[in-house]
Length: 453
Figure 1 (cartoon, one colour):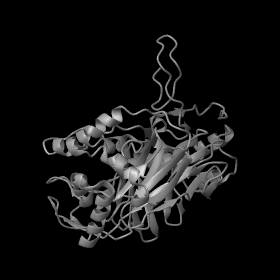
Figure 2 (figure 1 turned 90 degrees about the vertical axis):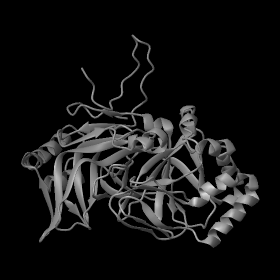
Figure 3 (figure 1 turned 45 degrees about the horizontal axis):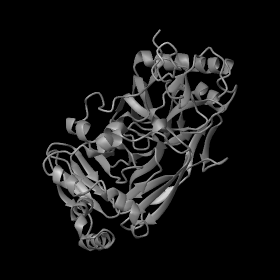
Figure 4 (figure 1 turned 60 degrees about the vertical axis):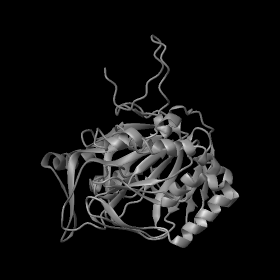
C-alpha cells in the first residue's frame, strides 16, 4: 500500500536503511477533498527561471521549505453590497455546507476536538466565518506539533495567491488544533479574487531561538567570516562565470545542531532593525499571544530598510534606482576600510550596491541590507520577505552558520513604481535547525484513537 505523502516510517529491517526523521507534527484529515498538505519541489515544478534554479540555492530551498496548503476546491472572493461574498464551485459549495458539520461532529466523537469547544461552535454555525477583517477557512485538517517544534502557518511564498494571510503559530503539543487560514479581506473590492492551488504554508520551527543585535564595529569577526567566502578568487571567477561556491559550501554542511540557538544580527548601517518574541497563536481553545514559556522562546529578527528605496519597473527593465545617499555610502566605506583594510574593495563594492537588478525581462530585484547574521552550527535561517503594492517578498533559506550574508529577492507582479520607505520592513529572519526542515509529518487515521505525543 502506498503511504500518504509526508508520513513517517521506521527502519526497514530487511534492507538496513536508515529510519526517516521523526515527524515534525501529526496531522488528521477530517474533511477530505478540500485541501492537501504537500511538499513541493524547489524549482516550483519548473516555473522558476533556470538561472535561479542553477545558481540561487537559497531561493530553491525556500521554495521547498514547509508544507504547502493546496486548495482543491477553487474559491472566489469579492466585496458585495452587504459584505464579503464567498463563492465556490457547485460541488465545493454543497460539500462545505453538507460536510463541515459532519466532520466536526466526527472529530468530537473520536476525541480529536473538544465537545462544544470554540472550533466546533464556530464552524458549525458557518463553514467559512468572518472574524473582524479576516475570513477563516478551515482546511479540513487538524495538526499537533512534536514536543520540540512549533508550526508557523503563513501564506505561500515564491508562488503566492493574491490574498494576504495573517500569520500565527500552533504551539500546543498535547492537543490537536484545526489548521485554519486567516485571509485578510480588508482590501477586497467588487472585482473577484480567484483562489486556487497553493494558498498557505505550514513550516516547522524550533522554539529555542534568541537574538542579540550588535553594531559591526563591536562584532567585526562576523563580517570577517563572510569575507572568507567573498575573497579575491570569488570575484575573479564571478567575472567569467557563476561560481557555484555557495552550493558547494552548503553540500558539505552537517545537519547536527545544538538544541538551542543564540544568534547574532550585526548591522553596519543605522539601527532600524528589531528583534521580537511576540507571536499570535491559535490553539485548541482559540486565539492568544505567546512570548515564551517553560524555557521555550522563539525570537525573530525584523530587518528594515536603512534608507528610502525607489525604482521603476516598466515590464522590461528596472530604471531610476535610488538607494543610499552619498553621505551614508561614505560612512559605510570608512567603517569597512577601518575594520577590514583596503584589500577588500571588491567585497565593499558588492555590499555597497544595496539594490541589485536582475537581467532584462526578469521581474526580480534583490535588496542587500548592510547586515550579517550568525547562527550556531546546524542552524539555518528562513528569510521571509514582506510584500508591497507591485512586488512580492520571496522566501529563501540560507545556511547562516557558514554564510552570514542576508539578502532578499522580490518578484515584481506588474509594471509600476517600487517605493520602500526608510525603516519599512524588508524581511523576517527565522533560524531553525536544518534537520527540522527535513522532517516529514505523520498522517493519522481519522477513526483511530488520538495517540498521546
